[in-house]
Image 1 (cartoon, rainbow, N blue to C red):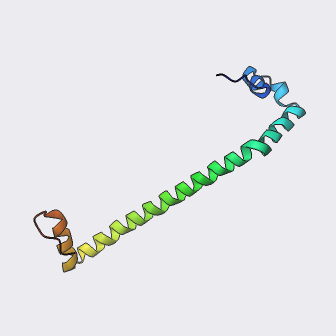
Image 2 (cartoon, rainbow, N blue to C red):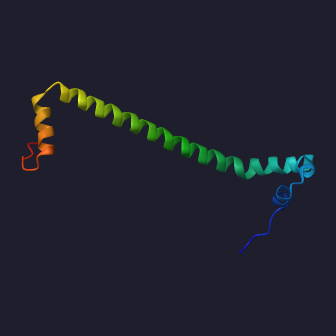
Image 3 (cartoon, rainbow, N blue to C red):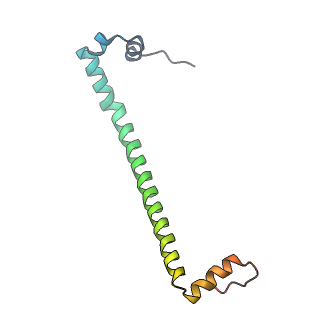
Length: 96
């Protein structure tokens, strides 16, 4: 079921710039922002910020883990060599 368009939507769609700048319409937009949109905007903003922070942290940790493993592997630590050999050769029994 289609809901009827509100006055603000009709004014914007028809491009009535004089009405958009009217003080009462500006007050209406401010009231709508205070009662509805502000809370929704900040909730979505906070959720996106948390998601981006988690993504950033996991990306940095994964990259640093890869660099650490490469550095250790290049030092020829025997235990680490066996670990990589076990992962590459399926027939080798796992010792851990």
